[in-house]
Each structure stands twice: as structure tokens, then as C-alpha cells.
Image (cartoon, rainbow, N blue to C red; front, side, top):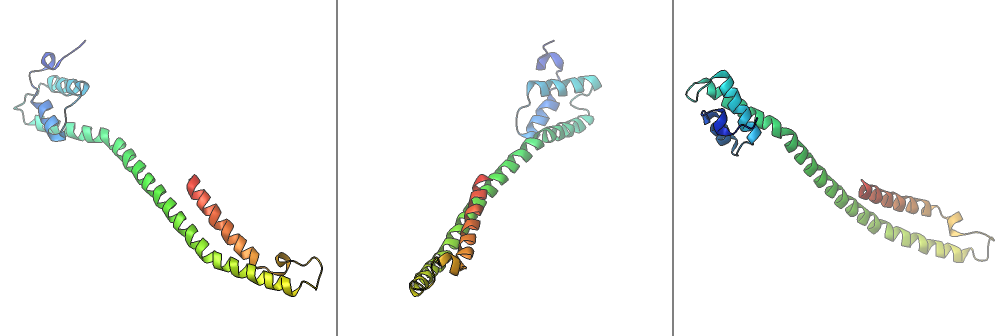
Length: 154
């Protein structure tokens, strides 16, 4: 049965009122639903109960749109959060590198000095075995690299 607006009811005031309140046209299925409801209860446009139907129509429209609006807001918040995390990880990585570079250069210079001092001393001795600064420097560098990688992945 293909009903059009004219086939169902001459009482289209309900549909027009709902459309005005929600600010958009109703779909043909929605129009048919509200016109059938109005016909089923025999409510005319002049009947005060039509106001309740109008409010129900607005409520139904808002209820149907809420999940899509929540999903849209969630997607937007996640995108903003992801961008913010990437920016923060880049800033942290740059700052760590800026702070670690002088320490690394200092450690290398000290190792060179120690290597020159110990050149005639022990066999097999190296900066890595004598100086433990490399552990701290390497750990910091790996932690910053891992942090940046994880943020990029997430």
C-alpha cells in the first residue's frame, strides 16, 4: 500500500509543526507515521492534544539523532587527542635530545681522555667497561624513541 500525504489525512498541521520545530523536512516514512498516528486517534489540528504529539515528534527526532551526534563528537575528540599526543611526543623527544646531546658529547670527551690516559695501562679496557654514563644516556635515548614510536602507532 503506497500512501501519500494526501491519502492519509488532511490533518497535516502536526507534520508541519514538527518540521518547523526540528528545522528540517521529515522523511516520507516519518510523515506517514505521524499522519497515521493522528488518524488512528482522530486528532484534528485544532485539538489541544496535537501539541503533545508535536512534542513527541520533536523528542523522537532528537532521540534518533543522539547516537550519531555522540559518535561524531567522539571521533572528533579522539582525532584531536591523537594529534595533541603526537605533537607532545615530538616536543618531548626534541627536548630530550637537546638535553642528552651535551651529556653524550661530554661522556665521549671524557672517554677519549680516559682512553688516552689508560692507553699504556690495561689491555682490553674500553670506555664502555670503565664508564657507566653510557647506560644512562642509552636508556634515555631508547625511552624517548620508544615513546615517540608508541604515540605514532596509537
